[in-house]
Length: 255
Image (cartoon, rainbow, N blue to C red; front, side):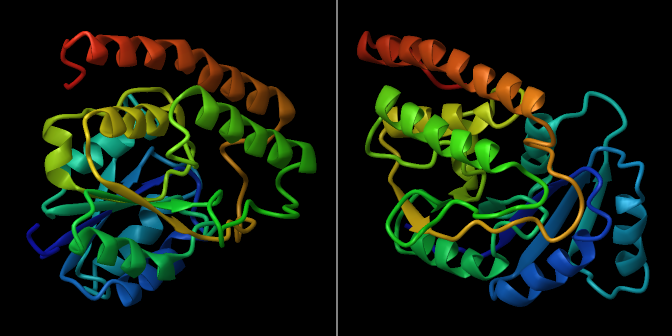
């Protein structure tokens, strides 16, 4: 397995004006390999893109690139666009609210350098933990998220634990075989399940998820949206069962 020579960190943002610059600085300090930080912003009305430009103009963070999307927006499409823009042999992405620790990125990258195709930050392996109290989310929402992951694990492959992680380091060449599918977080279910079926090696690295540092949750700002997204995750399970059947029958599940 070739070494990690250049890392592309993709940061999909929407209304993260208070978090984005401190996060960029934290990631830049954490990643020792040559790297680029690609902010893909969904035209945030709070001025997230403006904040990013402020550190780009004087060359404060020369590794930062910015893409502002005004049409065809959404988390999965932003990530896919970031992958298209990426120059690195290894791609990393994560949430932009500090719920995922930037200091864990080197550990993910070290696993890729040791030969793993995919390294995932996981809340549901030994040493990891789901967030505790979060003023931006109800305790019920956090509990339901944990139960959803348990359901996904036993419905898909028990070998993998955190099907809604969204914190990953992955060889870019994999995206020549697997394209992201889904509207919101279900893209991660699809990506990991196909990768497992296709025999890519993976490892889960524990991390402790914490409350976002500032701003409002995009996943569960209210119970209605949480239930709606949970139902979309569950509706994805039969489709992925179909993917497994296609694979067993010898049909292609790539692309």
